Length: 358
Ligand SMILES: Nc1ncnc2c1ncn2[C@@H]1O[C@H](COP(=O)(O)OP(=O)(O)OP(=O)(O)O)[C@@H](O)[C@H]1O
Image: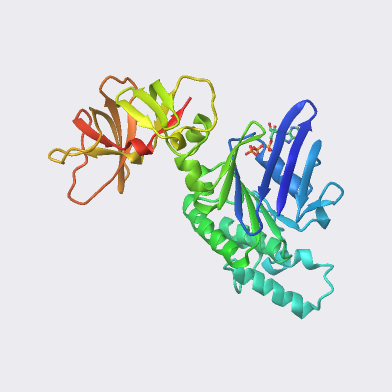
């Protein structure tokens, strides 16, 4: 649906996009995720035609967009700040893009009502836009974009100004809507959780480049680099020494865990040349309670910090022989006590959950 070919963008001397090559499939929910300033908004704007590129090409539906102005592209954008007109009614806002549409007044009114229904605002048409809440305004903006039936909907941090509850609600609704409509959605966000929840695929960007493009589970479980691993969720790292290597995998001596082997698909794709380390997510380790049977692989340590979340508890555990604690997440179970700081504990771990970075 959308193809970036070696897209470069300079703002004066500043190299904002450094050769982006990627494809966004028709009908997918695609996210551009990265820290502030990594170029994700710039890349989104090149799809819309709001930003000229310095070299390379952006294609939509196989057609080069270089000479196609923004208003001729099959795209529509929903912005971060709810760019709606406060002095107009909700219906007037939603129907704004139909001003030059040759359809009759009644037909346009019907289209407005349908768009409002799509975003859960059926019957809100006559209300004053300024009297709507933040979440409702964002829905009005969404309806205004959808009424034009774009092939691609571009969303620039549309939920960042909403409070947590409403944001989570909107995330689910947006996902449902995208599935129902089958339109390609491209979302810009710096919120990794939001990207993981909503996307079919995610491009993680740093410094004007795509560091990894994959589905959420692959990004989470098999990050290509330490930087991606660090950006998405929590990843523990333990220093490792490579003691042997063959086609069957890499043998390691890992601080706190001892000797172990990892399979080739557990080795991160990007070599950074730094000190080797194994990474693992907090939920891949288990605290073993007193009396629990031995796990296939165990380590021991002391609980350094306890963070209680109600449904879960995070434990920071100092493994024997390792200075920096590792974070372990445990789902709280009725009847099982939360352990205290200072408790000596055993930990079970699975070699298959480790990723080697080097
Ligand atoms: N019009 C411009 N002129 C000069 N530099 C710009 C311009 N627009 C963006 N930049 C710079 O390009 C880089 C990428 O900006 P961009 O807005 O794409 O980042 P972003 O990843 O979307 O960040 P944020 O989440 O903060 O919006 C930034 O360093 C920014 O300062």
